[in-house]
Amino acid sequence: MTGRPAWAEVSLATLRENFRAIRRHVGPGVEVVGVLKANAYGHGAEAVARALAAEGAAWFGVTSAAEALPLRRAGLSQPVLLFSGFWPGEEELLADHGLVPFLFDAGQLQRLEHYGRRHDKSLPFHLKIDTGMGRLGLDPAELPAFLEALGRCRHARLEGLCTHFASADEAGGEQTRRQIERFGGARRQVQQQGFHPRWLHMANSAGLARFPESHGTMVRPGIALYGYQSWASPPAVKPVLALKSRVMSVRAMPAGAPLGYGATYVTAAAARIAAVPTGYADGLPRLLSSRGRALVRGCAVPIVGRVSMDLTLLDVTAVPGVQPGDPVVFVGRQGQAEITADEPARLAGTVPYEILCGIGVRLPRLYVES
Ligand SMILES: Cc1ncc(COP(=O)(O)O)c(C=O)c1O
Image 1 (cartoon, protein in one colour):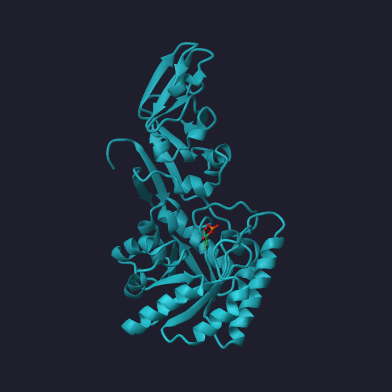
Image 2 (cartoon, helix red, strand yellow):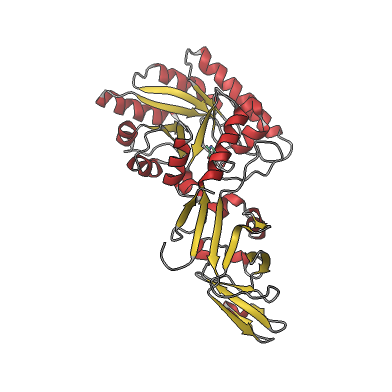
């Protein structure tokens, strides 16, 4: 690590525990795909993949071939699912690197088949059905025509059938139950036409936790691997990532002092203000300006003034003895106190996913075993 003390600490031990908890929850016979898209939700895809592979993960999932190739360069050989499919011209990458795209329409099937025929290669894919997300996926009404076309293919191979839940983490669950039912209908159609894909999968983290009937033969947890769950049911998981820094300077400011860009905060009384070298370019949302908190010496202290690109100010008046070099935690634990990514997410009007994915690329990731 270089001198600037701002880093994301990633506990590989916790990651592995979360993976094991998910595996125990879904039981044997259900494959757990390690979802590594967006640099493993900000945690660092290669290190996360290595840790999961050592734990026995047999499949990974990313958004695109561009995200999969670094895993291959890092020596990981597990099959990788491409959740956003493939783009024209990427057929060779699929074939050469064992990448398995989701397919959404018959045009993509033709492209795969065409490439496979020309190069005498068998290309597996997972067909994604839109059961209610309204985003990507084959409309179930188009399934008969797709299966007819598939019947003529000799190189494109239907290895999996899948869908994605729109609201498995929300109260109620009617939409998810409807999606499970529609998926069952699609599966029956596929089987009636003589296709028997080995992998049947629907569930993201919330789906696998709340809808056991959605487990199929494969589940695709992302956020739960990284320790976040907005539902009460198991598997119990713990946050993997902490956003840490150190106090850079502490200054005594008089009452009436404007702090930071725009002078949006003015001290009401004399205050001790700590500058911390972490800002929005590191993933601390600017919306935390004068709203968020950090931990110093085991106490929660307020962020004052605007979060800037590289720096943030904390009012440490209430904490005796704060000095340059003291550890600061924006997300994570310090002593008995903890700030999870749920807190900045709520204050910034977003979800923990976005906080984790937004951890700046310039921040070093420090992998720890504790
Ligand atoms: C197709 C697909 N499957 C699984 C996941 C993992 O979702 P989650 O992080 O909610 O478990 C995602 C992420 O958005 C996804 O796009």
